[in-house]
Length: 176
Image 1 (cartoon, rainbow, N blue to C red):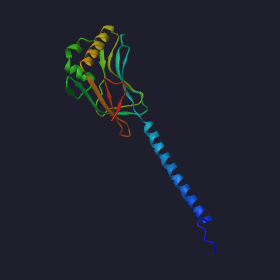
Image 2: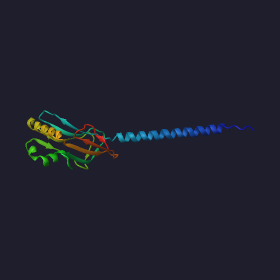
Image 3: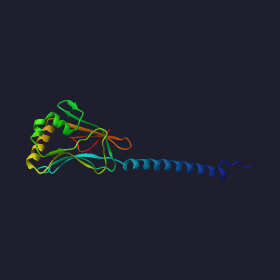
């Protein structure tokens, strides 16, 4: 008898194992891509922005430019080495009430732990309505606070528990 090391049965078996392994790797790769796509499909992206600087209707806004909701975990102000566990409007009303009282036509919105900010939402943190004088006062006050080192930190997360920190002095959220 002839002893062959590779016969047709062995070749077919080896081919089936190779095809199975390739199918497994393709399946794992597709699963990883689907998982990445799912995470990106609910990605929040918070940003802070100034609108109508120099005009009578100034706004400092918090905006979710992402495609998923942002869940606020914490809001913190750091000013002159001290940490304050609240947002900018509360900090300003508690720390500088005299300066705030001089601004007549101001409204505000608060952000707080546990708040959900839907995709596409814009929240006016501070807003001046129809007063160029008050708008200028607020802009000057915010600039002086920033020069004095005021920092606002907002930590938020996505549906998939990915976390970011948005800071007053940065335009890009930092992934934690």
